[in-house]
Image 1 (tube, rainbow, N blue to C red):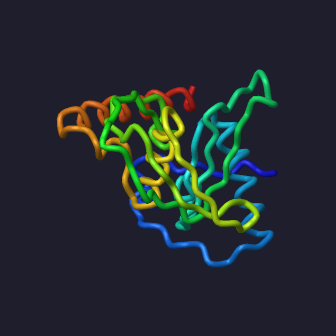
Image 2: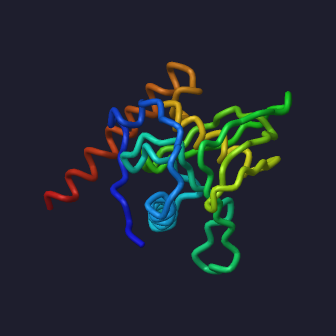
Length: 178
């Protein structure tokens, strides 16, 4: 497996709407494996294809991406995922994103969602998700439509977060020069 390049905000690819996958082959499964490896290396619990420069409707998730106990991991590969139902109830959760490093903000999401998708082996599946898995799925599916979690924030909160992100980028750039 390979670790893929991770695209960070404000890369334009993060704003592109992704195309449905129509070819299910070994090349796709290699991409899925590499995306999962990239997600684990970068300490994430979800990763969408545009975050690695691919505009296809593909996500990988793991609500328990434990480094300590690899057997506790619960990796999922979702191709062409689509939310087909959501609860009326919502929850507030402090989200982060591998494409917006070191930033977090409270985002309101549906408490439960039902997602239709195609799995690693090309089989149609549905999952009823709640708790953290529901939040991860909504976050990653948003990526496939060019939506970032910061788009769910008020103008003021988004502006503050982006200023902190800019400061983070400047500090990281300064560390590389030293």
